[in-house]
Image (cartoon, rainbow, N blue to C red; front, side, top):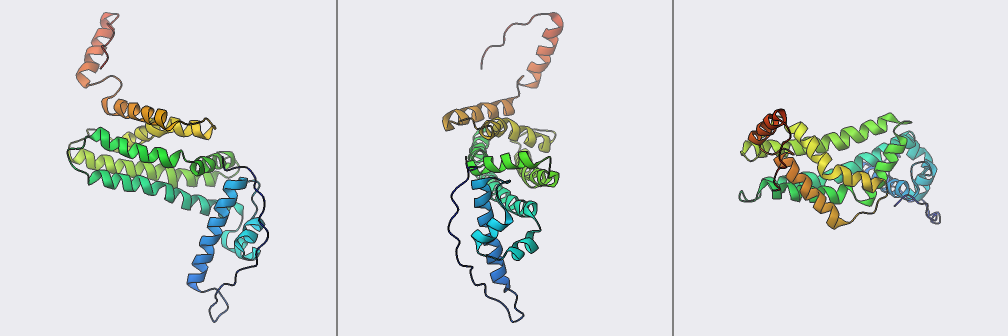
Length: 252
């Protein structure tokens, strides 16, 4: 899934970069060069994996000098961090867009349906082949490069939690959601809605969109209702537990 080696393309002639009077690339040319480097590095990391990708190979494929790559990113870890940062931003964009869309949607749309729409977006980008491949690389390199794991946590998970928590804040302000801590609620929501499916994808288990969405919908119902139901029923259940064996709760 995006980690097998591919045939190396024939070396291409180095691209001429427009330079300023001082001999350095112009600002526009430097931005284009960096974008090209990141795009090429992303493809090579996905095709070959972290260990089999070298800065020399990236420089050759991007048609830039080796000193340029080393001076810009220092080492392979620095290049991988730059690639990871861009990919995470790309993955989080649909979540932010979905949250904004649901906040501006008609008030007659239920909270459950709003969360389903957000969950569907999350499944599509967190369980996609690129996201899964990068998740595997981060996991395999976390011990050797803890700063890369920290980057994934801070730029990925924590920002996803913050975005979801802000969405929950809006719902709470509208009276559509009643939670004491929206950050904890966001963490629970993300974990139960996509956590299991993403882990299975990372392990290489084949995914069926229909079953993944069914699981997501069930998880959202549990998240909204709670496993024990309303507070008054929780109290009744606690009292019954003291009295002795309780009757099986009817299905909803």
